[in-house]
Length: 258
Length: 158
Image (cartoon, rainbow over all chains, first blue to last red):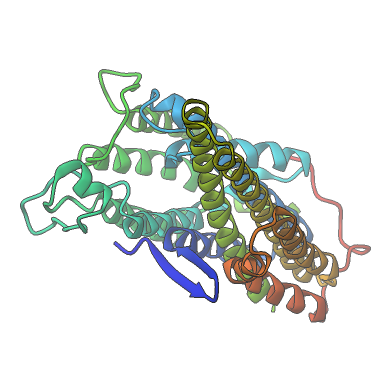
């Protein structure tokens, strides 16, 4: 855990939050990855350029959406302004869909390109969580346990004892998923694969989470995030059916190519 | 060049957003303390404390808005420059927006009062230097050969 770097110059004292820096690294990875993938496919730079605006709007919109909605999902246990990842993903998807419609972009094709790099960006964000000490796990008395400092959220909640580094578990899931998407799963099958595999992985990691998980799970006493995981898996299932009836072929990319 | 502009713009914006969040928390705390001080003053007499806290709260809020605007304009300017250079065009608009974000944050910091020099140094350190660097890069970047706005086809409908 290394939440911030203190800076003191003259009368000014400031802090650089490593969570912000790592989120920035993730966002750069996302943009540069999409740029590289679209260039290797020979897509029209003008259309891809418009897609970057959509990604920028989606990022800012996702943050705002998550800041507003998180409190409702977590039933008042969470103060205003806190963000959770899954409402953020939903917010990003909604804003991306709306802005892509406004720019008349072929959103499905670009989403298929974006998914692997979104996984990597999310993994950077989880590393940021580990640095900030949030999103920690339940106490662990095995080799996986990580001892956070005394002033950390984990020690405030569970006392001075090792906890599961669930941030790193999820980061590993996301890196694995990103690599799978980039190198194994072909275009046209990535979106539903992401929704299903991430939903299952996150559902499993949630059982080890030890921070405040809220109490407004919609199903069988599950946490809100687990309820949203089920939603992800269901949407992924619908997309499997939809993709089978309307497959995205490489040929469909051709009208986006210069 | 375009990759460098994007990276410095995004990192600068996230640092600015972080500072905006910190300043907002400061403003909220000062505002809460102002209420408590006002209550104590009504019981014990005196009137200076709550006024000072109220002024500190509004200063912190103005600084937060400045940082927030800098973050948003930095992100927009960086993406515009990245996109424009990718299309083979010039990135002057993106560079000007990046520069405008830093200038607006500095003006709002100065208007907020208090230690103006400290606030301006803070804005430069917390992402401002990255945005200034991005603005310079965007303004001097020469477009590589590629499709221009005029000869590119229109986006296709979904």
